[in-house]
Image 1: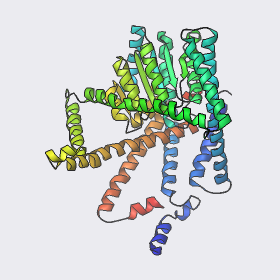
Image 2 (image 1 turned 120 degrees about the horizontal axis):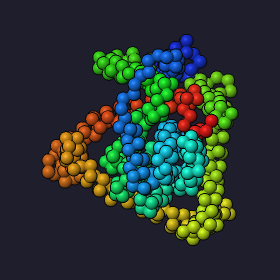
Image 3 (image 1 turned 60 degrees about the vertical axis):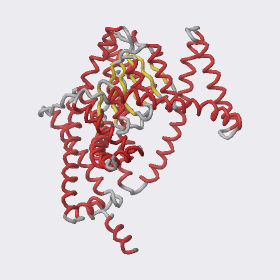
Image 4 (image 1 turned 90 degrees about the vertical axis):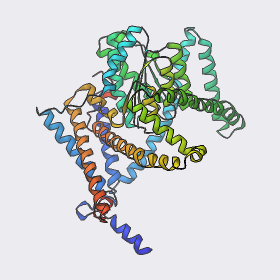
Length: 275
Length: 206
């Protein structure tokens, strides 16, 4: 038993040339360095006039224009929520990118936007983003700070207030991009019942089916993280999405190789990944 | 400086946190403990910040006598009363605990309970067999439901077996595929923030 324990510990020793890395994390470290290097290399190439990789069509992001346009025609507001997350959640940064774009559209079309949050710091940031979008669109006077609302940090108290806003304000478009948990279906179904056009994005695999069932467009998983590159068309940001795809192909290769090696009884790759 | 300073801070702290995850040399492990404490303290301040934000917003409604301003007044009184009660009694105080258990908890449970009804209406909409995909979804869901309900095994003993296979093989494969993309996307987003490429959270003004 003890020999098995020591064998497992020895397997977690990084190779000598990575002796400064903690045991068991060498493969992860190499992967992160690869991702950083690929991102940096691609950004340099694209900024130096290299060919810009095209991101495939993402229907949910293309539909933002349609959703805001519909709200404008109906004379009703657009509701945006970054969910119940905080600034420590990477999904929130995808939400900020989409909100910036939605804010510019609502400013341009002179449509009211209501942003609800469940975190006080998120309120301050979303306020700044929408204010900035209105300023950039040349309509700072149209920005209404009362429409950027902190509702509650409690998940279901937040949901109850959003449901109230849906009923009272009769929003025509509901855009949900960020962190969602059990309240996902409450928000999506309430939006569907008032006939709002709905765009949702989540990385939570347990809530995605609810969004798919109740919303018109759903961004699934990492599509959400491509939002800032897709909407801004910035070559540097596009480079990061391409680097992510390279990393995905690398992982796919490792998975296939690992499956073959495990099938023939070899633990070679598993041991390397455990070091 | 309005944008450069946050980008510099993001770069410094982001790089330190990533390095400390993999390298336990010198002051890095201790530094991470300190940063964790900073994070907890700033998170606690966020609650106070939220309360001030709400008080200003609803105070404005009361001062301007906007429609339904009485609700705003009621909200301000309840929020600050409960805050000071918590400070005075702590979370274990009888009155504080009574209000929490008999007002907050039933309200939360009610909202959570509503999900069951919303699942029914949402499932009805999703499972209408109008397209090939919806039909596959309907058949799959029916098998999984019958596999998990005792009556399913009575009708046909293979229902639980097929249901189990659907959940363990195709469902898990799909979920893991999505999760690989999600984790890579999160890592790439972190790299974009550290390198100062992701600036959406800094607002539109230069």
